[in-house]
Figure: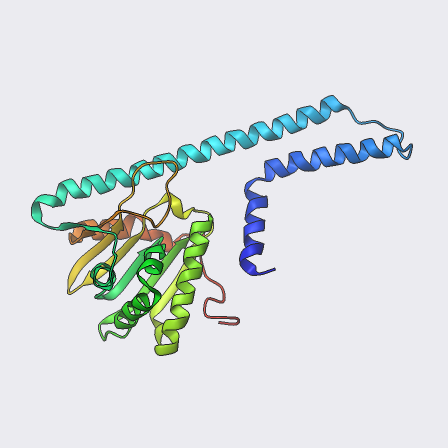
Amino acid sequence: MDRARKNRIKRIITSDFHLWIALATAVGYFFVKFLNELGWLHWEPSSEGLLVIITFCLAVLLADRLWEGEKLWEQICDNTEKLVRIAEATADRGEITLRSCPKSAEDYDYLWGGFTKTYCVYNPSYKVDIRTGKHQSVQTFLRRYQHPRFDKAQYLFLTHDADGENALKVFRGLMLEVQQHFPDVRKKIEVRQNKKKKACSAPEMYLGERDGVPTGVLELKKPTLSQQHGQPHYYLIIHDRQVVESYISDHFSEWNNPDAKDVENFWGPGS
């Protein structure tokens, strides 16, 4: 069994432990009941007690799900409110651009090409990269990392859901191909993941500097509980230094969160 499948099973068990307790209680009850019917055990468990335990576990599980849904809704609304405030504050100064989802190599490079110095990436998806072509993504990465004024990139993935896990898997595949052409890429990037946050709970953010101008590329999301990660119709491109630094401060501070761990064996076993 591969590592990703093991992690997924572990996450299912730990996130729904109330349900597993209820299931184990029911299995235990019927096992004892079976032994009693065979005459191997002279004690019969109470069916009322079993019902109370299972009902309690399911009630706690339901309360947990409702609380988690409310937190997700609040976070999505907060992100949307921030995007609206940014648009209102910068639209009249020409410091914000609304760009549709890229459909060509030129569109892709317009959004993510040209970053230099330090580049901070929060919750990327790479679904767009698959649509525009793997070759285009690799070429953009190579131009970025080989640029003499590029220092380092920090990538923080949210992997408490399948979207986040898949994004990290795709990114690793792209980086392994980049490494074949430019081995020093290993010195240029750092990759961490937060396994306690879902990718669908926050937008993609690409923050740094391009042509000497602070630049942020943000996925434009709407407040909806059925939100999918990495499938926006538009991206916001922001050139306001205060706004870009604010997003780095508000979101990329999670880089130093204890829940953000370096991705083990990112470049292969023993890396």
